[in-house]
Length: 398
Image (tube, rainbow, N blue to C red; front, side, top):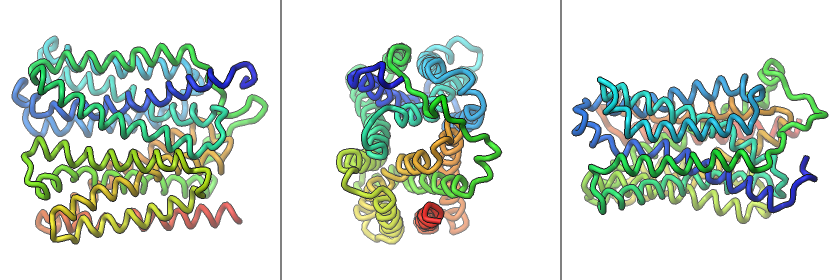
């Protein structure tokens, strides 16, 4: 199939993949900017507002699971189109449904469910589509791809904040519809670009039973869980550090902390995307794991608030390669894993994104609400990640 297309055609596929991760950043990070607005405009309680993020995440976990079974039957192109359509519908629904339904909260939940289905599918599909493209350095390309989630996060927050400042927060529904244009157009774009098969037609993909019976698969699942836990275990608290460290108000703190984390994470991914040919992936991930552990120590033990904030930024730099790097190791080590492999890795990563902050919160609660105690305990995740990398190396050499 590859011979039927020019390099410029495959470059269009790569651009579509980049935009796909910007779409995922939009559906994950736009609504949280409106949580306070939802409270005042629709009279929602704090627990209802905070449950929206958990609901979004839970739907994406379910999508990760079912994607392993059904995406190959539906087809990548069709699945990608509908993924973007769901994302666009969710963003438009966020603006329309709360006013159309008797319960504004129910309307918001339906909108979140719609774009969560889209976001979950995008997470499962984009990486294998990128992996199947005829690019030279696969792991570097994967790292560069995942950097677009970071830049999308930064762009969504900055541009939305600018819009709110110029047009007023009361006009947020207009912006929700504007953001919806991106997934709508990119979904159409995916109908036109070439999409290669991850597993060649002459090869047979691994069955779920065979995949589950491989020790390397479970080691990679551990790596993905730790990658998600390392990332979210500290980033969820970045705004609190910004408020304490810089003396900002809550709005400014919510912007500075997460944006600093996302920007440094994006820089790490771009760095490996540009210079990955000269760096061994597993070694770079191991160094990143050590740096991640150090960042947890700095954030939890530093007396100076500014130094604690620097620990958060350092954590963003350290975790950048972990998620895309694990995808690349999996694609190289389990060549016929197919969609099921990427879907279950996404599921493990999302479970880590939930488990990391939950563990930090639990330990903090057991220590009288001492957040630094929780973050210090969260240092176990980069240690487990390093152990997983050692096991990967051992099993590849065995």
